Length: 328
Ligand SMILES: NC(=O)c1ccc[n+]([C@@H]2O[C@H](COP(=O)([O-])OP(=O)(O)OC[C@H]3O[C@@H](n4cnc5c(N)ncnc54)[C@H](OP(=O)(O)O)[C@@H]3O)[C@@H](O)[C@H]2O)c1
Image (cartoon, rainbow, N blue to C red; front, side):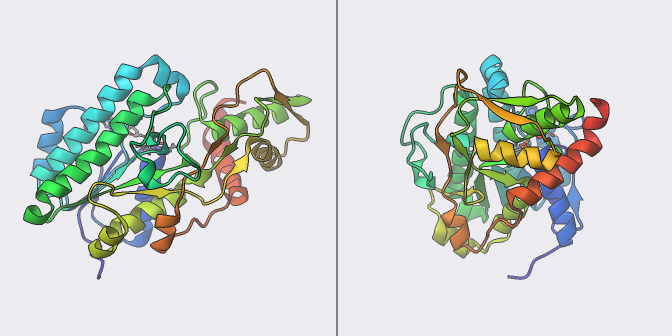
């Protein structure tokens, strides 16, 4: 199918890590008619504002990468905000997009939608088969609602209105624009910051929480953006033949995972930290493994391009450019 680079595309959340990568990818591919609003310009949790925006702009496509996002601490401390903000953003954007005649929408979820004890690697059909991780359950419930909103609008209005709303579920992401907050960041940005600071202060050892044996999967954010555009551009017949009406989401992962120990050594190499790496066995490890099954996406013809060595180097360069300057 021929691509129309003049399609009017709204990227929601374009200041965020994922939204900004989607914007970079769309621009690089030649899409020319992209509309953007910052959070200050448009509060997506506000129904009236979202309605006005969609009625005025009437985009052809929407990438929904805006969300209230945070680590375990923030999710545990502000569960009401996490469930309320995310449910409102999704309901407002998906419903008002439908009302304004948007034909294609991509909803970005997260692998936390899957049950805590789902078999590894986690397939798409593990959704709603068990109990969720309690720390981010409210956030996960909102993300599950986002998938179900897309599916329900497709089921009720797909044929009559020609709409096609899809969902992608990324694994852990990292890269430019990541959050390097000392207490509230994900594992890769936290390690980059700690190893960088240890190098700058000549600290003899960096101590990592846990045994280092638990395994995690990581995807560079530009790969995630490429996968998002790839999924959005897929022909409807092909997308439908690889998904189900009530199981329409697609996992996006790197395809391999590594131990926290291996990751720590890679980050030490990337940041050129020469001291020792120790493990604090008294601290918890978290789940032993969290690895999603991306074979559905791979069967569709997509594969990640940026491995952890290359991705960490790019992430560290971005950290030095945009974050470290203020911390040294
Ligand atoms: N980062 C990961 O490892 C990861 C992994 C899996 C899935 N994801 C998913 O990817 C999506 C984007 O995540 P991200 O890492 O890019 O998060 P992020 O960097 O925090 O970006 C989220 C963006 O949404 C905006 N936003 C939040 N509430 C808003 C509102 N009410 N109205 C308008 N804009 C609002 C934020 O603006 P402000 O900053 O101004 O509030 C920010 O620009 C999320 O759905 C997340 O679940 C991320």
